Length: 169
Image 1 (cartoon, helix red, strand yellow):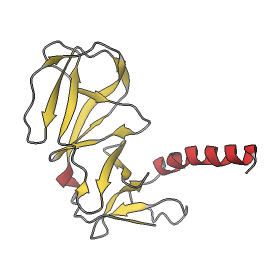
Image 2: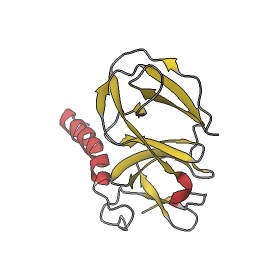
Image 3: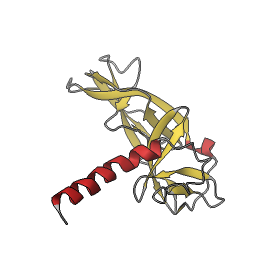
Image 4: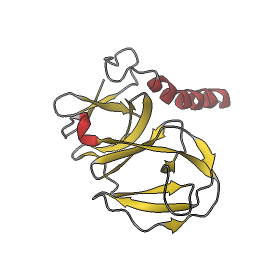
């Protein structure tokens, strides 16, 4: 393959997720673009738009959020997440890492955490929140600047989904 054709294919691959972001929260049939796959549950209810084999994007309260799914068990549960604070005693606004153009959702037990904004901050403390709601001890953070967003949550059960999941066009 010639160099210009390789660059064209690479450029098109990078633009593919941008087309998904214009989607309409599952109301479209996806038939306009043969490369858009919708992931649905066992009753055909919309889960999200497929970005990879196990990563979907879904609009939640006006924010495009990605999260991992497993066809047999539903939305992947990571069982814990780090939450960061600008204070030294783990009080105030909670922040979670934000490192992509979508808000990265992380399921912890029944709750999906995701950032609603993106800002460069230097957290001073952090703790681990477990799936059972238990919060770990407050620990000092590294004070290294990074991109974070205010942590927002939604209950996964509010989606009303039932595994298994499958991709469809």
